[in-house]
Length: 619
Image 1 (cartoon, helix red, strand yellow):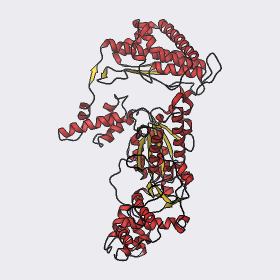
Image 2: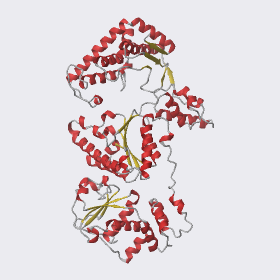
Image 3: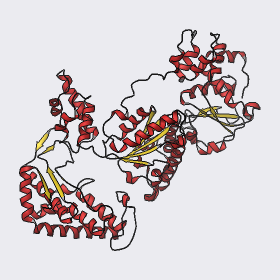
């Protein structure tokens, strides 16, 4: 390592302001090391802020080579690397693809955060130092060697607190006379970061948490609260289109943090998708977030990372390494001041329990479809409040399955209609932008009414609800594969500690619709199945929980957690047979009861065909 540079190299370096500033910072960080003082061989890992890292590479190369164009060593390796940069242009491999070596000379590895450095390299390193951004003294020194006007310490300190681009520009500016020192102390203006989470409607389940973390971050910035006391990890679970990605973006804006957005799919698709590629991509995302001193790291598709409790076959080694590395990176990242991790998934039950435990993604929020009032507020927001939420209820109350993404798409279409006619968005524009609706034939409406009344009668027979509301649709939306033709609403009692007969009654309620169709029409439609959340899906899952988790089947046995009954759960043939028997038995019981109530079933269905909605109570 070269302590002193010859005149030519020093002159060349001093003319490059960012290189000179980082040379000063590197020397300051390394001056206490044996490698700097005695030129001892060894591995040096330098942690540098992301906006300075490429300037640090130029400066480190000058220190290591003395400014020579080529520097030869016994093992023919370069003296300075940035973690993740290609080592050999022909190989195209990153630094972490190579075995850590013990050099006969010195080598410097630059990284934006320790989390991005492979564990073996951390262990092998002789020195790990944090290289701070240039100081006020470095700014004064740079201006002196450039022959520019001298500045006092308060101004130099104000300049040193600026982002790299501004710091470099002001340091190289010929004259700083008239520069507003107070203006430098103000936050640097950025592009509009809206929307903030507080600006957005919806997200009711997360509101309290967001308000608390916003106050905690403010207290942390003022030094009143250690980062360890701030909630830093949250898992968002919900169906597609419920605004999980927008939540992370708006949260970052609310806190004044950067957003680092990635997904497990992006990690898996890195390079050739080998284990090393996957781990390197994952480490790079975490390193990017922790280097920013204030970032929200969004990890989408988190369920794809795997679950060690369900690992089978040849992929167990791969998935085990991926989950282990993710846990390690998450733990270290959440300890880094200013880093918040948001995981997002459609399937929370597929995620390893260790990821969701306290100290990692400990806050769990389920984002369901918005309720009636929320739908109107979301649409009003996306049409820039040119229409009130109250006015929009006449539209949104009929969009019961609409996601926030659907409502945003509707708003874009309505604004396009308004632009074409060169006006402000009106309620007519919104109605004109609704998807085309196709009237349902009366025979289909009649079958839907029979189906829903079947659910209602089985609910009333269970004794678990006092008031039941039914509503059916007269139209279907063109092009939508899954639609809600009708719905039964009721408030169920005795949910705190259900017994076996309560669970079996729930299965009969779920099977009531398709059983009613068979009783009245002599056959069944596909309306009870076909998608997750359907009647058959819910009945089957509940039966598996009853047998394999709750110990309420033939045997007093626990085989799987109740929330793990999903596509990745592989039941034994014995368990499948018992579940089939339960479903068949309860379906027969449901048909028998509805056959006895056939007259009432047909009468109520006929009334529902006419009115399209109905309330049934105990009286």
